[in-house]
View: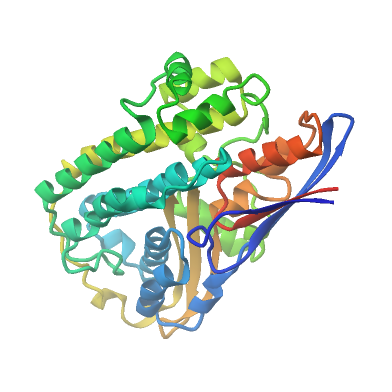
Length: 403
């Protein structure tokens, strides 16, 4: 039995857990692929805590996507407390989107300068993240100077447009320098030319993934997770305590993440038309997601206004018993938290479904992309499986074994 080793780093781990992949190779194909995700259920630590304490604790429980985790829990608490309808969503929600976009861009940046070089056998460059981290870290204080952006009911929103514009300019410069080596490619022709130039680790990885034997490899045929509403996730999580262990949309697996978000982007449309489903399409989606984030954030900044925290006195008494669900976007895809408050305002139950639960489900995109895929030998099966894992990007380490 061959072992592929762990995919990831301490920054990628979320308190333990792992994805294990077992491949059976025969006749030049992966005859069977068994995928099992063992993600730690840190959400259980929120049960029994008051709503405010749970919202404060959530970002600390998860070493990845802490802002999105905290925001999803805050939104769930707001719904359970009856605060959501009364909040100034016109101000707080765009600002909250900037917080999660900044976090997602930093996660993408980690992939580009640490994980992607490793896939090529090149040294990782974590020091290259310094400027990007400084830029993304400037977003929260430029929105919520009191540091209360994840507060239930919203914080004191006081946008600083000059500081935000400066942070976005630094993000764009970082992408141009460290990832694209110039303007990002806009279609399949530009992608091929950019890859051939090989000016960055991302371009060199693109050249590998555009090779004829890899570009269409790993096609899974799994539809996108189009659901975004908290109501849908509330029904799914609230109605089935085991939903996260086998998530499904319309009785079928679903894919979430950059490809789902960027399916209509010209680069992704063009790459799909040329290469079909598979590695090239997934990588094009990740590139498009990175390139679009500063642009989308810039559009949001122009629409920001000031807002004060929501008065929570209306949530006193019976309203403290209820259920709620909060949804947030991460670099890896859609995250949802559902919770139930008892009559004292403490969490009586808490559940979540994360992108890894969808993309690495037993019958999900990874498993379907691997099963039946052509491989010349067992070593190639491991190498190609690792590429597909990287494009789907689990939030825990991944081990690959070949039987």
